[in-house]
Length: 354
Image 1 (tube, rainbow, N blue to C red):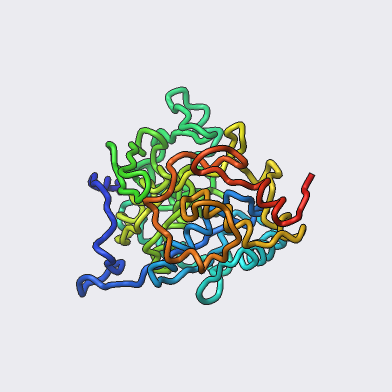
Image 2: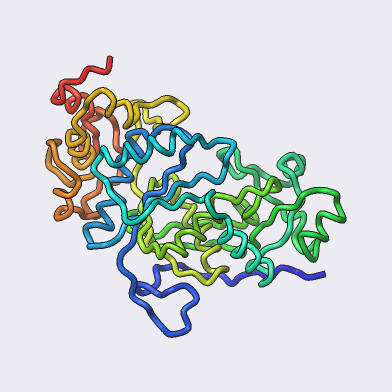
């Protein structure tokens, strides 16, 4: 029986700017490259708008490239209408991108190839456990946010996907063997981010039993093949960087520069969500709001302007600096640094959403 190999522990820092994945000819300098990576599972809200604006500014302020990627592999939740609306909303906000958007579902070949490489190298293994199987284990604690800790039931159990499915009569997924211990990544906003992934989640799911690739896996493969060097997103995904670093190490990919920014929240401290019907970019666009008013409000909340005033994204390139970003959540119509003065902006734009 083939046993999967554990990867060695490490403190992860961005590669010295930048090393091409799998290069055998030494360091290769790549241009700063960021990405806007929405999922077409709902309308973009103000939190998305702020994160995407900052991600765009981070790459463009360094003269870099920006890719648009539609992360649509979970087809049960994806709607084509949302994909088109996302493009319209981003253009309305004043954000552009290089080349054609990468649509994940259009070609799953790169994910299949990367998965096979991990299996061959012994960094991953077949898993036939269902969610109910894992939940039934009394020694499998919850990892939080509805996530279950995987107790390693299938680790070292099967020689191949085919063997797993023959032996159990069940479809098999794939998991990454996660190294034990606390691991860290260096973040441009938060400093060092730590997680003992083996204790928090257990071995990471890469391919579900219904043949859907996981978010972490697809993101890592795509960032690698697109040469992404800058990843800026909400700080609710900070520990995801540690998990993705495990995958990057297993695949021999370079690590990007991570920056996780505070979320936009309402006055009760609740973070915005698509499913909660929070105010969306599309609604503002459809009501005739001048996008420069919104960009100015979002820029002011990020410390890029002293006060909210109409501005286009390109006018902010010279002032972008992550060090100016308030470390507290951006409160809609709150007080103090980091607030998003939405009501003031809407009044100035002559729009009443009540």
